[in-house]
Image (cartoon, rainbow, N blue to C red; front, side, top):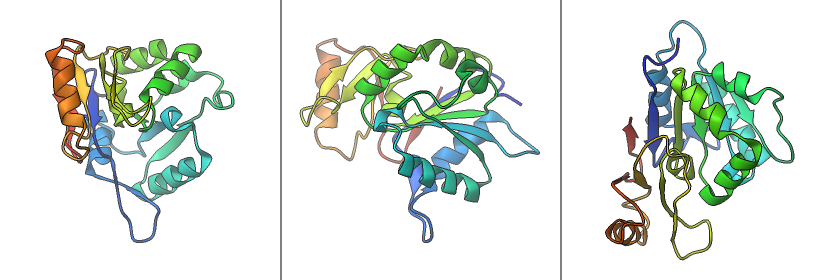
Length: 204
């Protein structure tokens, strides 16, 4: 059962510590699943780790967290080549697509090469909930600020634009984020911009 309207949960969180696992899903991740409206079966979730280079040990941690949470998890890898033949078809079959943090600049570049924008938009319009953390949150917007290019934060303005705003992640926890995002709005590099503290998500 898809969400009853196109839905995005944009976050600065999604994971929590666990006494037995390397990580577990926080209430934010679970809320993305709740927004999908799934009942009576295991939710189908695809994790996309492009921003971190599709690290297989991270995939393993995600699969273990999904096992404990009761999710049917698939990792979509693009390095060194896509591990799923029919990506558009696969994405349409999901309940939630969760995008990991990392380098949003690299994520957007790789997605462009592989033509992911269209399939992601189609999934969203068909009720698949789009979500993610940090880079995996910024990507759905027009842009934001990023450390993709080095310690000095810079603007990124080539987001997918599913949401017509800028996005400021980690607003309370990284001291350079707040003044940088304010400056980018002030000089009109970014338009109206929505920001999240760590542990916070915004539903669209």
